[in-house]
Image (tube, one colour):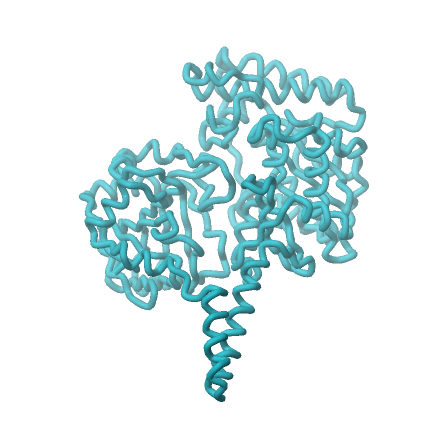
Length: 559
């Protein structure tokens, strides 16, 4: 019974379809886990950790989930979410085209008994769609709300002639959801039984002791099986303390527990870091068999592994004000197998903001050492051909320039920027996390938390841009290894600046691949890039940011 069941909630299928129509006009994204499906499986987010509708990942960081602008256009979707009284994480629309298959896989720990749950509400479906969970086909109908235990093996096959689209909601268990699930027939006694370990070391030892007294061939065979079970239990207990360096591990999360600071690791194997963002790379790597077991270690392991590897020193840090070509630039560089390109690594962001997450707990010397060790682990050579390391920071890392420069005093810094009005217009269409008040600590941008409730999103982002340009001016005044780079110079001109200051010179083959990459959208290799700019008057709240942009343009001409 606990594997899957419908939940009692009234849903108007016509209103669902009306909100879906709004969402169909947006840009959907191919599902990141390409190993798990064939055909076309796309998604778009109504809630995400970045506030971006194209951020379709379930959980990539410790950031809270927030509504995307797309959800704000969908009143009935919001109404449904309001009926479910719990903390909601990612909320997405998932679309599976006719003839497409989601292969059998498991989402480890995604079941109600583990404190998390996923709901599916079909908006468009067909009787010919097979949704198999735990070996059983779930007969989901349009407008119903279904829970399934996705820790079990599951798969989907769309044998119909139309696309299948579900509203998919991830939530956190609480007392209200317990009552809701109970009313649907959820068996809490069965759950308790499921959570009981089938064997413990003590049980195995007692069984072996009894079987040894019997001393028959059968008992000896049973002892051998129990010893194998005991060995596996021991392996599970120790795996969190052992990182296998041959599988190219990288630290992917930092957190505190009772024992102190700890790191979670993700194995990357032979994977090159070529996705637009490093969070995309981590999502792909999570599907590797080596990552089925969670690996977590004390901080000492981070330092030990960093010291033991062959790594490249950084060639350049790329700062940017957002929506100014930094992703395209990193994608161009990743076309060369001689380059390791790190594009907005979540862990590096966590480490830069460690003192904001845990005020007063870590001194400057330790935080610098952690940051340098993490960079080194990401810069590991998998082949001798790698010669250059480019680190594209998150936009707000400009405001952590002092710490980054302290760790890497001689590395060139590229300050990429664009017209303030163009950046603001792009953020109006689809906001990043730094453009939404309250998602990042206001102190990063020299703002006061108490002022945020009275501030519009437009004014807030104008002040964020002011802080970026102000930081750029300060950096250029005192740092001879910092170089301004304008989006308006064009893709190849941006590459020329990189070549000039880092010594990376693409060969003919690499250059052809780089030029081909510039034809397509920076975040989607399949979409031909088209840019449309609309001229609008500069509002008063944008005046200071626009003036700062003009000063940057002047400084660039002097460099």
